[in-house]
Structure formats: C-alpha cells, structure tokens
Image (cartoon, rainbow, N blue to C red; front, side, top):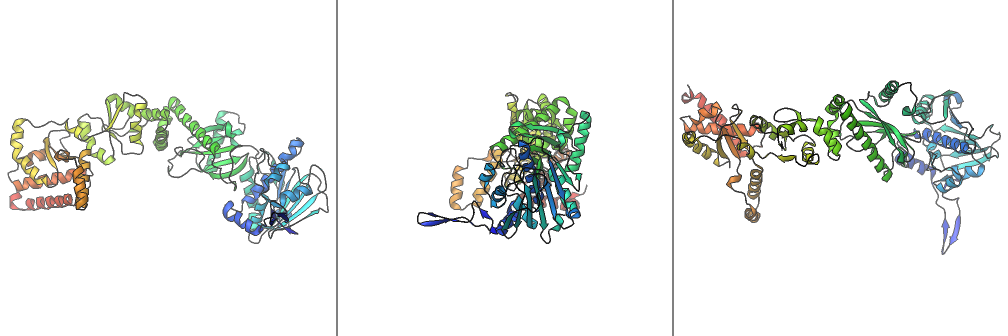
Amino acid sequence: MIPWHYHSRTGTRARGRGVERAFQVDLRGVVDLLSRHLYTSPQVYLRELLQNAVDAITARRQEQPDAPALVAIETPDTTGDGTLRIRDSGVGLTEREVHELLATIGRSSKRDELGLARHEFLGQFGIGLLSCFLVADEVHVLTRSAQGGPTVEWTGLADGRYRVATAPQERAEPGTTVTLRPRPGMEHWLDGETAGDLAVRYADALPVQISIAGRRVNSGTLPWQRAHPSPAARAAALREYAERVFGFAPFDVIDLAVPEAGLTGLAFVLPMAANPAARSGHRVYLRRMLLSDSVGELLPEWAFFVRCVVDTGELRPTAGREALYEDDLLADTREALGAQVRDWLVRLAATAPDRLQRFLAVHHLGVKALALHDVEMLRVVDRWWPMETATGPMTLAEFRRRHPVVRYTATSDEFRELAAVAGAQNVGLVNGGYAYDIEIMRRLPLLDPAITVRRLEPAELTTCFEPPDPDLETRLRPFLHLAADTLHALGCEVVPRSFDPPSLPALYLLSRAAVRAEEMRSARSAANELWAGVLGAVDTTGAAERPQLILNLRNPVVRRLSEAPDPSLAGLGVQALYGQALLSGHHPLRPQDSALLNHSFLGLLDWAMTAGGTR
C-alpha cells in the first residue's frame, strides 16, 4: 500500500545542489478541503459517479457505436450488505490506466493521453472519484477495459492508501462497477430514496439509460426538445414543467438559443412581481448533466423577471461544478440571452398590446431598467407605460401630444405639492419620483431630437398666476407689509397672486437657486470664522433667491384674513398659512419653522377662546 500522491509517484531526483522530491498529499486533508470549500453538499458524490460513467460510455461508443449505454444503480435496499453500487457499460480501464487515473490527483495531462479529457466529456478535473470519500471510508472499483486485458480490482481508503490487483473473477462485459461503503453517520446519503432522488435530479436528461433496481429513472431528454402533438400541447407541458421546477405557472415561455455557447433552453416569465435586488437562480445543465438549480449571472441584471432552464456545451463550470466560470464567453452569452428576452418584449408590444400592459403592470421596473440602455425598449416604455402626471396617468407619447415640453419634478413630494396647481394652469407635469423615470424622460430626445425635456422650475408656475390689479394691490398694501414683516426673519418673501384651484390658500415655492442659497447660509452659520469668510466671498446669492409664499387671492380664507381689522390676528393667520404650506409640500421644518407653527396654532386657539374672538 502506498499513499495517494500529487503529479508523480513518490520519489527523488538529484538536481543541482539539492534533491528534487514529489509533494505528498494527505488524502483526509484533501477530502476536508473538498467538503468545506469546493462542494456545498455531500450529495455531489452521485453526480460525479454518474458523470464518470457517462464519460466512460461516451469513450467506448466512439470506438464501438453500437455499444450499450447503461448505468445501473443498486442501493443498500438491494445489495443487502449496506453498500451502494454503480455499474456502467463504459470503456473500462486497464491496470496502467487504473494507476494513472484513480491514484493520481490533478494530473490532467494523463487524461489527455488516455483520451478522457476531450471536449465531449462531462468531467474535466479528474477529481470525481475523490468526492466519494465525502460519504464513504472505502471505495471499491472493479473494471474491465474494452481494449482487452484482465478485470482489475482497485480499493481506495480514506486514509490515503490504495491497492490494485487482478480480480479473482472476470467481469462478463467491459465497463466499471464502483462500490461505496458508507462512513458511519452518512448512510442516509446512500439509501434508496436519497440516491433515487439524486439520480433523477442530476441525470434525468442524460442520453443513457439509468436504472435503479431494474427500473429506468431518467427520461433521457431535455424538456424543450421533447416531441408534442401540437404547439398548444407543448405550451401546456412547459407550463407544467415550470410549476414543478419553479413553483409558478409562467406568464409566457421564451425559447433561447446561443450557438456560440452551444446553449439551448427556455426562459419562463414570472407571473408575479420579483425583487430586483435578488439575483435570479437558473437551472443549468452542462451537456445534459445538471450543474445547479441556482446559477446566477446568466442574464443581465434587468432581466430579474425570468427564470431560465438551459443546457450548454461550451460554457465552463467552476471547479466545484455548481456555477459557471466568469469569462468572455459567459459575458457574450449573457448579452445574447438578454437580447432575446428584449426581442420577446418588442414582439409582445407589436402583436399583443393587451398582454404587454398586463406584463408591465407587474414587471415595469425591469423593462424601465432596460430602457436606460436600449432604444427599442425606450420606445416600448414611451408608448405603453403610463406615467403619473398632473392630469392623470398617461403614457409619455400621449403626454407629448398634449404638452410641447415634458416637465418633471425630481421627487414625489414635490409633485404632490405642485400637481394640482400645475394641472389647473394647464402646465404639463410628470412625477419623476419613481425609479428610472427621470432617466427615461431625459433619453426621449433619442427617439426624436425635437423633444424638449426639463425639470420644472417652481418659478415657472408663477408666470401663469394672475397678479392683483392696481386697486386691489393698493388695498392689500398694509396686509402685505404686515405679512412681509412676519416672515422676514424666516427668509421668505410674500407674493399675492390669483390662481386655481381656489381651495389652495397658499403655496410655498422654493427654486433651485433658493435651495442653493439656503445651503450656503447654513454652511456659513455652521463654519468657523475663517471658513465663514471664505464662503461669504464666494456667495453670489441674494434676496432674489429667497423662497416665496404665494398667497392665493381666490381663496376665501386669504381674502378674509387680508381684511382682518386686528393686526395680531392677521399676523397669526400668515404664520399659520406659512406652516400649512410647508407641511402640505412636505418641506423639511427648521427649528424656527416648528416654533412659528406652534406659536400660530396656540395663538389662534387663544384668540378663538377670548371674547375678542367671538362673533
């Protein structure tokens, strides 16, 4: 018995001043490394054994096309001795090949020499048999080569020893039988139910016959390649497959194909909303052997509304064979699959607008994210997705037919404050507070360079308001002076105007220039003397940049307040209107604003309860 080794048999070689020695490998340490860092579960042992069996059958059929393609699994229920056996009709191994393949870790060059590392084989890492030590302390291999020679018996132990001998009895046909004796505590991984479930899960689509206790357990085909009597029957079968695999009846099914990656498959469109932040898990087969049910990074980030089932012959798996290796081919494949999902959406818009509307109602976020990069998707969103506007929901295309300029607010709070006023003045306004909406509107000139898009400047609304006539302005002058004095300390200008709707008494308008001026004043007040001087030198804002409280002269409360004989009551009323305008516009309250709001409320309450406030 000799220990398993790495790259060459144990030995030394003189070179220069020293002696060259081969690395020694602690097999238990390697198995621990595999179980903790390479494989996520011991269940991969059966996948690796089935993979080796299919590779062996493929190798034999290249020389003998009519050779049988059979893999038989016997579980402890039928073996009677607590072991699990997997028997294949593959090419088998000679004694030399047994030494080279079964007792050497990581020597891929030998796989090339023996013809077992070519493109059409599933395994590429030469560590499949090693995964058996995740569940067993002893692995027994009985093999007979199709090239001739005696049947060879190989036994490997988890402590790193192995032995090779000529079998006492010849195997009837070429092929290999692997027998596992479970490690204490791992018996459940080898029992009939678990092994059967794993065989169906990993090997259902493999083009060989896999049987357990004489019963075939795999279909041998991929779901999208099965024959059906009609397109409707195929659609029904694929819906049933999606319900079984993913747990939902798909909104639609998209056929996928990327020839460069040897990829075919399906994309199932989710019927319910998905979390854009959660990466989709896709079912991926590698040459019809299941790689994983939760492969990410297969589609672009925006395509979070589909789940895929694909088979690929060219994409590379990671060493653990549970994910795809990130390289240029995977990046190109991701882009190609995204293009096919996008083309499906374009076809849906052209042929079934009602279904597109139902789809957008659920998955608009993904479509809008794609519209940021794809002009055709931008066209779909422009034509079909209703935005929130001051005059009700409508598409951007319809909005532009009514309004020559696409004006938008940066936040939903700003929209809620200005929507009623803008609508009453027939000023087109779109709520840009939802995800991707502003970016989409800014991209509209790509569809037509004549389209004008800009953020609404609140001062634009005042140009639509009606100023008071000279006589009314003269009568209002004492009240306006009082209002200006009341709000002067707050840095707010009072402006009288008449506008719709009359139910709105006051509007607090804060231009972007005023926001910058307020930020500059706050920075100067918080800075030390040196920095305050520097900020003062660069501060170019002035009184014209102050926020404005627009008093609506069409509002009955404002008219009565302007005629109030008691100046203290009028001052309290102005303070209350200022606070109400801040609150209705969802503006942040500074400490002085909160103090003024409390003062006006208590003052009006006190005035109402005194004799002077009775009518």
